[in-house]
Length: 342
Ligand code: SF4
Image (cartoon, rainbow, N blue to C red; front, side, top):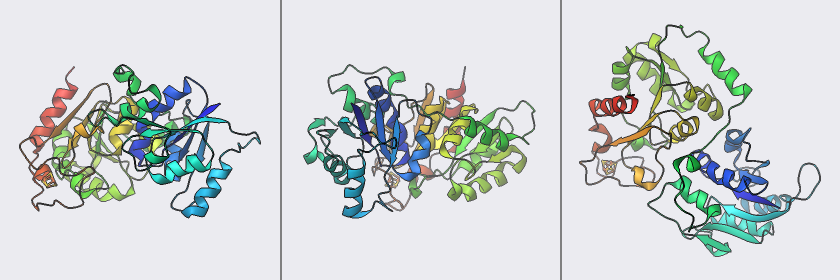
């Protein structure tokens, strides 16, 4: 009998689900329902038997798509039947819960705060004060399990040969002058979570490190600004050039990552790369901060309006955006130096 984990949320949440996958894999096979974008992220993962791609915004959209996917879920590609002991609703929507119900899975486990909780047969306490990786891990480990050691809830991803080759290709023309790589992740899909002083920080760091800008294709303009500020010869622009798994491989080769509160911090947690995360309208206390063995967070502690939003609003509701604008380069630079001290 296998477990089924349904995680169709943001990519960062998928990374934070990997400790739950490892916990379940110690008991038996684990199959995972993910979005098309997240499937590549879990490639090579030793805790995962089958990845089932649920295209909830495309081919599997709507009630008919949901029903079709749920009915097909029991058939494995080798023609055998998938026996599922329990479904773990890592993503808490009614749609995910309905998927497990329509697939005929008797035990359905999720958080007591989730939208789909009425369809669960067991509800786990959503502990607002704990890291989300721990909250997810507790879906299997149980509410009464002792506090896990940090390594148990640290996410894990497994870049393979293809990812190593992609990073080798990206770095092949970089001069071998002994300069360490330091990664910057200046993007975020939420506008107010983008710290605007990355170029000034980069100018300060460029004499000491070779800088690598990581992110998606949408972050290209931010990377160009960083290159302008610090000298193009000191900057490697990796935005839009690597898959998320290859970005994890790249981060594993960096001395540290400086990032907004966004997905790259979770990739760095999986890579074990020292991470400094910058928080503006959100806060690490929400449970989505970095989990690398060495990590730190920085934010404007003097503002009473922080945090103002669970994800970060597109524009500051007060109009001044002081949480990020007034967070100075000096403060971030000092936090990074402390993090990197031997
Ligand atoms: S209200 Fe405060 S915390 Fe929210 S975006 Fe504006 S400055 Fe930042």
